[in-house]
Image 1 (cartoon, protein in one colour):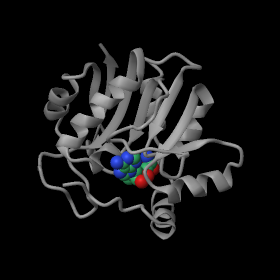
Image 2 (cartoon, rainbow, N blue to C red):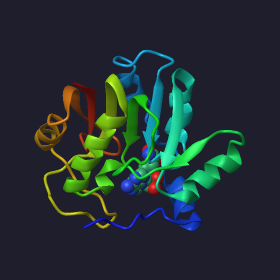
Image 3 (spheres, rainbow, N blue to C red):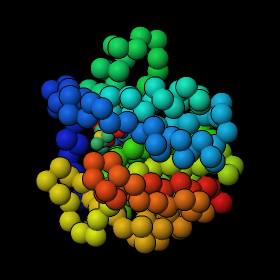
Image 4 (tube, rainbow, N blue to C red):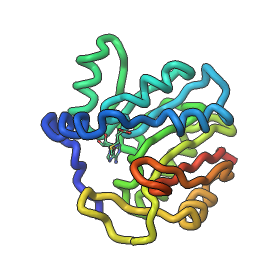
Length: 189
Ligand SMILES: C[S@@+](CC[C@H](N)C(=O)[O-])C[C@H]1O[C@@H](n2cnc3c(N)ncnc32)[C@H](O)[C@@H]1O
């Protein structure tokens, strides 16, 4: 069953912005640069406060998106003139195509089934040989935690991603603790 987005209103979004201060996806974006040349188009899913969107925009033509209108409003207010869009990572209801799709700690809010649907849609909206780059919380439980997060092992992620793409990189890394996270980079077949 889908989990209600825990960032759905302005107060929850602002709480997250406070809690996540000091964290960013610079490490992931450095890995991504090995596979995605500069000036390509990239869509970020679940941009939240937009910290990674700003870093991605240094190198790429980046479009931010989120399911939470609250995050989009806050970002628009602080960055007048920029365009960020309301998009659910499950059905990706857009006609646009991108050379890459990026997310940092977003897809763990989806059920396993929704993750499959999301990968299928991501492949649809990628240009030829486009790149995916996503991070996940690492763990071997199949239950959601109190924050609505699903956990993944490298093996399970490889199994899912390999249905839709060629896996280029699958590595553990540390976000808050040693080896608590996984980064997946894959390419459209
Ligand atoms: C843990 S926060 C991560 C935010 C940001 N990527 C970061 O690194 O700080 C999860 C984000 O995913 C968004 N989100 C949750 N479910 C989503 C969905 N189905 N589609 C798009 N975004 C979603 C939330 O609104 C929130 O912005």
